[in-house]
Length: 87
Image 1: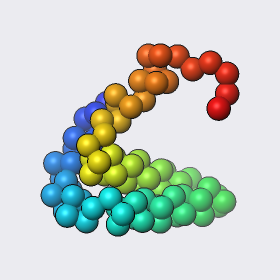
Image 2: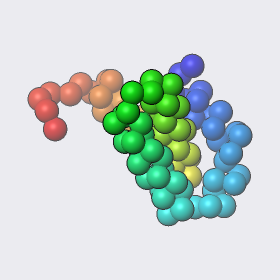
Image 3: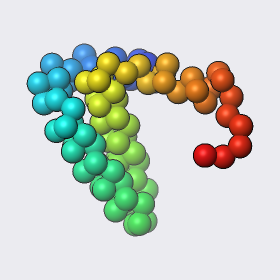
């Protein structure tokens, strides 16, 4: 599945509710998932790591959808323009 397909899938399934929640509350959910990923990374449960990575990606798509950001277009700064050096 392409990034744009997943972002559209998330929007179709959750978009109405996500937009009602708004950016601030959506960002808080995203941050909570980042915390859960951090905890999973400290452990040895690979399945839990996969689950938390999936949750973080889904909430990233949600946050992008709420803010009308096309993630595939946004990552072109890495995929099409090239990246020189380190940031």
